[in-house]
Length: 355
Image 1 (cartoon, rainbow, N blue to C red):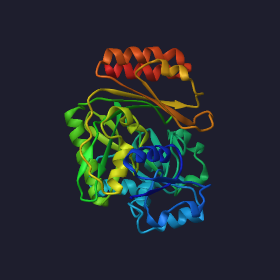
Image 2 (image 1 turned 120 degrees about the vertical axis):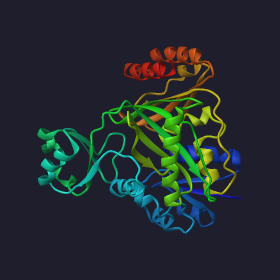
Image 3 (image 1 turned 120 degrees about the horizontal axis):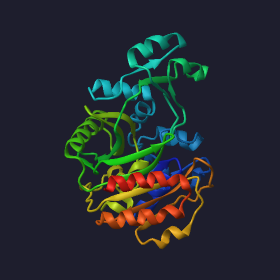
């Protein structure tokens, strides 16, 4: 029997465990509270749900384990500096950028990158944390400890954001889901919309880029690539070497979810192209209390993470999919009064995307 240990025990590890059950694959998410004697890591394949996992004696051992798939890839992608250097090496389109080493570089930064600079910590920082949008008169807001530990990018005037979730097997074969359209607010993904047929040109460009990255790294498993949509084509924003929030719609909207696809890849099971037959919408639940009235709507699938509800914290998501976009839009409309007011704009955006 194949077994998988997951570095990290957040919601992604939880959903990997759920996906393993029907396959007969025991999945062991490993966090701070894991008991070493209860985790059969010596007989397991090792993967991760997050780029920076909890630090314990057990997780250190797992991170060195010879069966840790992509062990040497994580440091490259977890550091935005080496991630950007990878894009440049492969001649893949991304926002112009540079390492931000010292304060004296600011005049040259704005000369080169334009009036809006996006500063990102090299490691850590997600969901809008560890990032700053600065103009020339605002650089004093940046903490001193950022210098040498951040990259700075040109602020891109994009028309939309999309992500591609794909997987590569041990034999080098790759499969991809259709592009997902994403709406972020304050750096946090609020809503995603996916269609069975994506824009052909964008899908082809995205698949070519992500395939090149996975092949270069000899990567195995699911990887997500976030992109800006611009008139000149897609620009890669960031990579995630794991299952990703923008792929959660696949749990109910595809024949194989991203979580099952990742497990299949890392334990070397067949990796067919997932089938997507209808449009899907995913609504992130952020700092919002559980409300079972959502389930009165027949298209709604609730995925609750059983985490303490705190402002800004992802505590669950709702998936909706249907071949009838009018019915999908009507269900989204019926959700609005069942959610806090700040969800209305994201739902309106999804309805607009569904047309």
